[in-house]
Amino acid sequence: MAEAPVGLIAALPEEVAPLLRQVGESAKERLGGLLCYRFPVGRSEACLVLSGMGMVRAATAAGALVSAVRPRCLVSFGFGGAVLPGPEVGDLVVAERLLHLHRRLFAEQPAPTLEPAQRIVSLLAAGRPEGAARTFPGTIVSTSGIVTKSSLVGLLPAGLNCPVLDMETVAVARVAAEAGIPRVALRAGSDPADEELGFSLEEITDRELNIRLGLVLLTMAKRPRIVPQFLRLARNARTAGESLALAVRVLLAEL
Image (cartoon, rainbow, N blue to C red):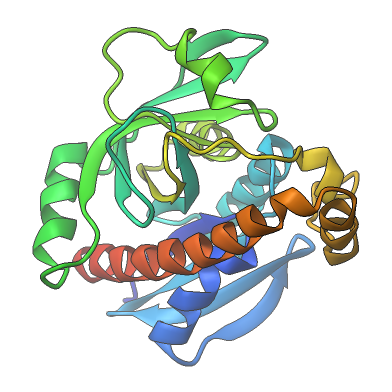
């Protein structure tokens, strides 16, 4: 009998495209109105759902995945911005803690339960070729929108290990915890700690947090000085995407 599938959730096409290229043929379908890709993993399969950005959409995607296929575990992955010096572009952070930042307050969230973060770090490090990006255990901080790193540094609880920012992980973890499904979260660095975004999320997305090329171009036309940053972030996304693809494949091979 085939095992239950592994559930995968990521927000952006750029986060999943390298993985889909590497796994080869996949079946594309709709799951609760969201794009879902299925591909074989050993005696089972992986179900990868593209959620879109933000806590609400991530929770919706996780709920749809749990209801439709009841995965044996759930892997949340994507890009993250480093808050403190340590992880660089393409480096991986495996969540050992999850925090939700809301109105300048941090709330501890259900911790990943698939395996201890340090064991997953060791597993990924052993499965990566020499010279590949580094892997750290750390803290993923999910926010409801883009925040400046400079404003966040002074608010961080003491003792956080390699904190990185995203907008989805906590929402996925909550749904998985409520369903009793083991979970793990990975983030690949898309911008180092010393880089602040020169634009706001609202400038380049629609009301549902979909990035719109027209808005990106308009924002660059209004402020040409941020064009180099957009180009640099695009390069960073390619690096981070390849790093994620390799890490997820190593993890899937073990699962």
